[in-house]
Image 1: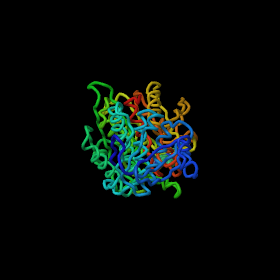
Image 2: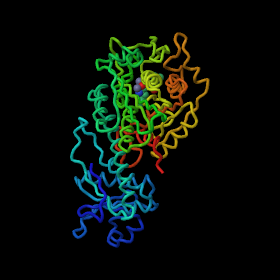
Image 3: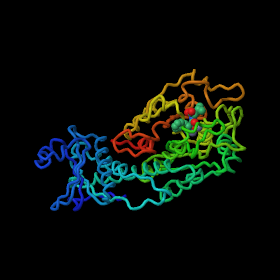
Image 4: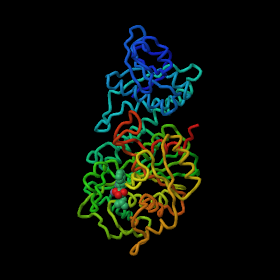
Length: 473
Ligand code: BES
Ligand code: ZN
Ligand code: ZN
């Protein structure tokens, strides 16, 4: 993808955004009923003098951030379908309505509207080249900043979507780790890969136990980005990296198995957000930790009733092998606290079906043990245009994880499954401020939530994790 800022308008194809009122003022459109400027209406118009145009309607209301994104998605989609690879976007009406931040949003719109999955992941070529025009001379420096940030965030999000969309047999745990390391090679992020034999030697029985269910060995990837001062707070970002979740011996039903390749969306979000932080040299110290594994049936699989000793020392009773995410995140959490000495920690995971029943596909669940950290997270979500809803945590729910034969069990008896799943992970956070995000509903869509949204992976979590460390306004 190539997105540039250029003055004045480039020749060739231009996308022009028109409100209803503006469309009415064009006699040719109005009289012939060709184009009314309705929201998301689109019309190709060949005109020899000024180059051809694609008109996109803005409707009646002043476009906000969301409308900017949607109308640009519509434009990019139409261009992709028409096979037009070079075009200009006339930004002035969008900037007039939403300010310069419209540029960042438009960039995101271009990426989403022209998204398609390309496998293998490194082969993406032949992408559109887009020119943003109609930006005032005096705003050019600020506009360029917006463009740079927009591109790096959109690239990061698209990368996360690509990894999540990649099928499980093409992105096994070690492939996932290698893909991330390769894409972080040109950044200031330091990568450390802990391979299966090391996990075993270290006593990471939860991660090694789940990962041992497959011939494709588990691993854990550690990403260190130090953009902040020495001695300043380090935030741990843990992301679930299950590249294939069959449920193990507590096997999933066939119809709930289609989504299983997307069970590493939390890990992908962590890697992508860290890449964007490094690219923009954001002043923050962040350590990403992504436990990666498959959850299958094999001779070494865990079965319900087993008791294992986790890396943090707590003994865990396995009640359900399909509750694997919390197990591998428990070991990652202990590693974050013991080995990486993080000051606060956030985990993000496609963790429970219960959160989908509760909040649907637009809103993710959040819970934690620290007011200030939670407030900060919710503000970051707002900056990133994502929705999270805080869930309650009380003693009674903590009680639900009590085990008769070990320190804790990996599933509550019944109900409030999203809360008990989160609390299980939090039990390994020691006394660190901790926030948990359950993106099982938001990481994947089978029906679009807004016009033009690509189906499949959504890139959930990427903007919120980024804006946790940089305020938007
Ligand atoms: N990865 C799943 C959760 C999930 C469900 C993600 C639907 C996306 C869509 C997780 O590992 C899981 O299987 N959770 C179980 C937990 C239960 C056994 C306590 C669930 O939610 O059913
Ligand atoms: Zn599972
Ligand atoms: Zn899972």
